[in-house]
Structures are given as C-alpha cells and as structure tokens.
Length: 177
Image (cartoon, rainbow, N blue to C red; front, side, top):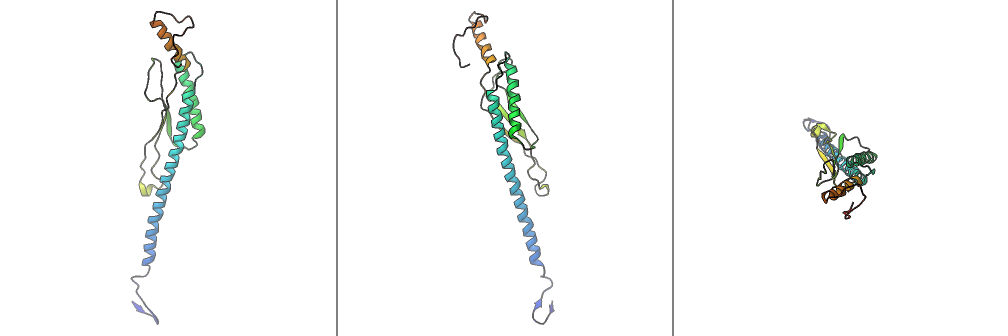
C-alpha cells in the first residue's frame, strides 16, 4: 500500500475487476458459439428432412413404363437423387439411399422410401466441445406404388396359377394396379 494525497491504493487488488470481466466474457461468448452451432445443426436438419421428403415423393411416383420392374426402380431413384440435389445445397457429406419396395423376386419391404445419413461435427469450436461427430439419419418412408411392369407381372402370375396364359390381354380383378 502506498498513500497519496487523497486516497489509499491497494496494489494487490488493482486489475481484479478486469480479470473477472474477461473470464466471464470468455464463458459467455463460448456459450453463444455453442448455441449458434446448435441452432445451425437444427436448421441443417430441417433442410435435410425436407430434401429427403421431396426425394421420397419423387421416388414414390417415378415410373418410366418399363417392362421390367427393376428398370422402373432405377429410373425412380435417379429422379429422386436429382430432386434431392435441387433442395440440398449444403455440403453435408452423406449418402441418399433407398429402401426399394419391389425387386426382382417380388421382395416386399415394410418401409419403402428414401433416407439420408450424414455425420456433422457437433460444433465448429473444437476447442470448446472437442471434435466429436454426430450421426444423423433423415428418413422419409412414404411407401411406393408398384410399377406398371410389376403389376403386369403379378396379374400374369395369377392367371398362370389358374391355368391360363399371358398371351391374351385379360385381367381377372382390379387389384389397384
């Protein structure tokens, strides 16, 4: 301590408020960065969900009137990927995949549609949160109507099971195809 004309100054206490302010400021700015990163992850998730939904809708209605059921699936997936890229302008490294409804051996899956898997980092401030990655999956399983070729194949099999042949264009019932 030293004494001046009007007040006593304690040299051990000078600058304490500055250090307290800086430490509090750093903590608050860190919380703001984490909150903004969390908000951006949520916003990116909404965009991914919408793009996946639109791709699944495109996959649902895609049919190129092929004589082969598998050929129609490929065309629908190609169109769905194109629609997905139109909506998805973010550079999230992931892959759009499909659960196919009807395949070569008339494979039926309960969940039919598109899904997208990606793994962004938790935060851009790796010093604060580490460099951990999160695994996200955006699913849109709307279902898929069978293609015309698949319907024709099913009706033909039903006619053959009854002893007929598929040379004549006949249909016994309308099963929704």
